[in-house]
Image (cartoon, rainbow, N blue to C red):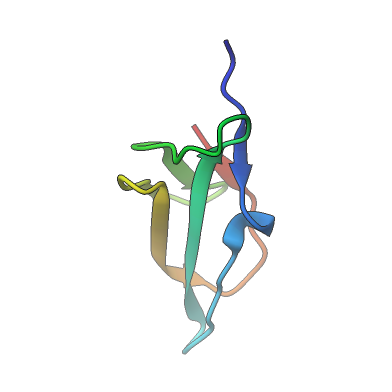
Amino acid sequence: MKTILSFLPALLLSLSVSAGTGTLKGKVTDSQTGEPLVSSSILVAGTTLGAATDLSGNYVISSLPAGIYTIKAV
């Protein structure tokens, strides 16, 4: 059974810009059950930045330069 990831809402993207860098925060859940996905890897494509989700499915990526990014969950 394939697990489908959903980022709520719209990746729960929270990018606060200060001195050209910001923080990306979000939550990863199973799209069928709504349960948080623990220890999922969240990667910012084209960079070496990423994070793992916690027990609640939340993640935080700090020191992200201002811009538009593609986020991947593995």
